[in-house]
Image (cartoon, rainbow, N blue to C red):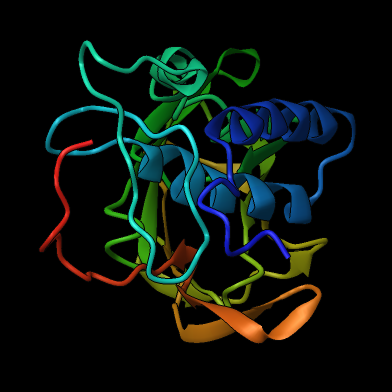
Amino acid sequence: KHVGSAKTMETCCSYNMLKLTRALFTRQAAAELADYYERTLLNAILASQDPQSGMMTYFQPTRPGYLKLFCTPIDSFWCCTGTGMENHSKYNDSIYFHAADTLYVNLFIPSTVAWRERGVSVEQTTGFPDEARTRLNVTAGHNVAFTLAIRQPGWCAGATVMLNGKRISAPVTEGYLTLRRTWRAGDTVEVELPMTLRAVPLPNDPHQVALVYGPVVLVGQLGDAGITPG
C-alpha cells in the first residue's frame, strides 16, 4: 500500500542491509545472500548517485512513473548524503571471501584479490553488467590446490565456463560453480552469464511488477520536461 508514496526505499536502509548481509555470509556462505548483495548494490547503492552531478538520493521511489530526486551541494544535506559518501567507497567490500581452501567470487567487479596464505592472487576483468561475462586470471608463485567457487546468479539460467580457452563442465554446488584443481600461474577462467528480460511481481501484488534484465532493475526514461529544480 505504500508503493504510491514517493518515500519507499531509503538508501541508509540499503547500506545497513548490506552490512548485515556481509556479516551473515561470513557465518554461513550462501549464494542467495550474494544475490541479494548484488541486487542491492547495483539498484540501490550505485543507482543512488547522479553520474552527472555526483549528488545523492535519500529516498528512491518505487512509485511507477515517479522521478528520482537528488540533493544539492549546499541547500540540502540528508543522512543518506553523509552515509552515501561511504557507500561509494565500498564497492570492493564483498567481492571475494575465502574459507580454508575455497575462494568465493561473489561479485563481478574489476578487481584483484591477494590470498596471501595461499600465495596466489586473482585478477578479475569485466564490464559487468554492461557485458554478461567475467574473466579471472590466476597468478601464483608455485602450483597451489584450492577450490574456486564462482557464484552462478539466481537470475542466470546457466553459466558457461571456459578454463584456459577450453569449455569445461563445472558442477554447481549450493549456487556456486566449483572448480577444484591445482592452479598454475597464467590459468584463466572465463564465465558467460546470460541475461534475460523478465517481470518480477511484488511479493503481495502480482499486478505490479518490476522489469529486470539480469540483476538490473530497469527504469523508464520519461525525460524531465516540466520538472523544475526543487
